[in-house]
Structure formats: structure tokens, C-alpha cells
Amino acid sequence: MTNSDGEGKAAAIIEEILEKTAEEYLQLRIDEPIEKAVASFEFDRDAPVTHQTFTQVTTDFVRHVYERCLWCRQEMSAMEACAEAVAILEEGYQAPRGKGYYAAFLDASNPNLNGLEYVLAQMAGYITSMARTRHIRWVCASRMELADWPTRCLIAEILLKRWDPFLLDNVRTCSPAQFAHHLSELIDLGVSTDRKVSKMLGASIDLWEF
Image (tube, rainbow, N blue to C red; front, side, top):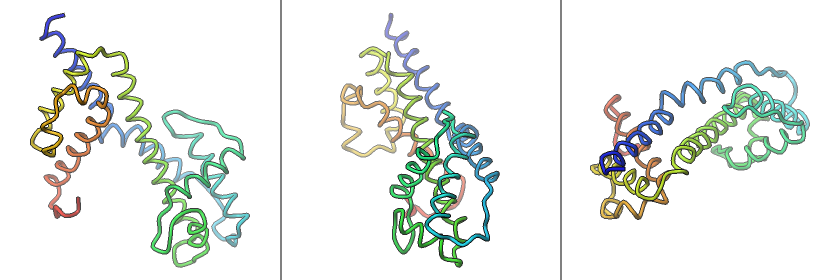
């Protein structure tokens, strides 16, 4: 394989990864199905929020979303869904008064926060974030795990050149070989930078938001 052939192969791998992790792609394949599943979930909004109803609704919500919309659809038992709901709330629930499962229960009990709807919205956001992360990792791994060392080095070299204006000095001075085993992280860094730049150019926002 000539050097130009190697560069072409590396460039093709990069373009496929960037296509499958583009914001528009993620919104279509990840965000929108989750949003539709969330919108179709029904529960008794007038029922008093007790520990029992809170556990039941969050468990049912997780089962409903996971079974209908994730890119790797997953059927769950009630026990599995309950454990997943608790994990999501513990790891991903954030509120002004606190974070985690018990903070979520207190907020669900607060009529000023629309009760359970407020909690479910946060759960949906966390599920979306997890689904995006897993998808991006899968795309990167499935496209690069069989690449040989020279190809991986070429991928790193192309990415470093592509995003050079936006990289920190300590990243810019590294050799491509130093990133050959960290291509997913490099792609994630570059994609995140691209999105921030696009957002700044597309909407007049303040730089300190980032």
C-alpha cells in the first residue's frame, strides 16, 4: 500500500466516523426517538407522590424508553428497570437543592416543580446523553479497532492538522503516534470543538458560556 493509499484509507475512516457522529445524525437517530418515547409515556399525574408511586413511575418510564427508542433496543424486567432508574437518578439527577435519588424524590413531591414531570425530563436528558456517548464510542471502536498501526498514526495526523487552530499547545506539540491509541478521545475533542465553533458562528452567544 502506498502512502497516498494509506492516507486515503485513513481519511475515509475519519469521514465515516464524523458522518455517524455529526450533530444532525445524533438528533435523528438518538434524540428524536427518545423524545417520541418520552412524549408517549403516560402516568397518573394526579396521584399523590409517595415512595411507592415515585419508584413505580420512574421504573415504568425507564422500561418504556429503553424498549421503544434506543439504538440498541433493550427489553427489561421490572427489577432491571427499577435498578436502572435508581442508577440514572443517582448518577445524573441534578437540582438546585441537591442531586441523586432522594433529591429527585423531594423535587417530585414539590408541586412548584410540576412534580414527576420535572424529574422525568431530567431522566430523559440523562438517558439521551448516555445513548449518545455509547453510540459515539461504538462508531469509533467499530471503524478503528481493525486499523493497523500506520493507519492509526495517519488518522491521528490528519485529525491534528484538521483541528490544529483549536487545540491546546500541549496537544498541538504531541506527535501523531502519541494519539494512535487514543483516537476516540481525539475525535471527541475535535467534534466537541467543531460544535462549539458552529454554535458560536450560528448564534451570537458569549464566549464565556464555554
